[in-house]
Amino acid sequence: SEGEGQGKGGSHNLVIAYSEDLGLGPGVAPVDPEVAAICARGAQRLAAALGARLAQGAHPDVHDVVPIFRVLRAHRLRGLGFMLEEPGASLIKEEMLGEVRRGISQPPQAVEEATAAHAAYCQRVLTFLASHHLLVTPCVLTPPFDAATKWLRHGPQGHTFQEYTDWLILTYALSLVPCPTLSLPVGFTAAGLPVGLQLVVRPGADDAVLAAAAEYERAHPECVRAVPLQAPVVH
Image 1 (cartoon, rainbow, N blue to C red):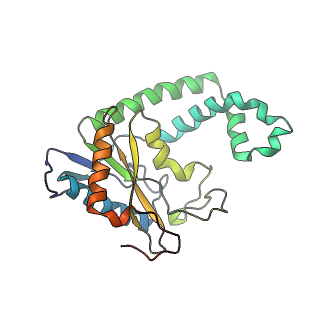
Image 2 (image 1 turned 180 degrees about the horizontal axis):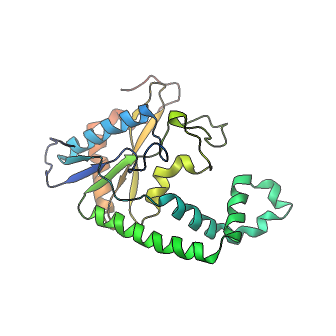
């Protein structure tokens, strides 16, 4: 479904795509309901500020993002094999060491396949952005969590994360492509924790993403100020 913004000076030739989870579904990218609601409202406000048309649920095909990311990340970390030896190994988190081991042990064919898949992945995203002014998603799946928590093992909807990077899937899904991406604060949870949207544009359109964020800031300055964790909730 689609909704239309009515911002001043905007153009309905601009199309903003908003996707809560990039089509990955709750089994892979379970978004916290409060984050989802804040981000959906933020996307609507952004479209209104720009006078753009909002394409709800539109997104590029990123179905193979997890294997691409895991294989290529491990491949790039393989050169850190020296960290597996003491005394350095005891200073590095086990999750990182596990990725280094994976990079060393995975076969060359896996890297070749992931590299080819990555090229196709980037092309799909770039093709999508050719017909959309912005792609907008939540920055991450959950609100900020306690700094004492090493990484999220349990996410929304009873989901269990298998790897320490899993809760960042919406972030790394877009960092895999050569596109300017901006994190825009768009509201706060009932506990006063900040929630942000990712704004993504085609390569070279840095000015467009900065201008879009500036328009949002002008329209909703209450959402973009730094606040103490115990500050009053801003709706």
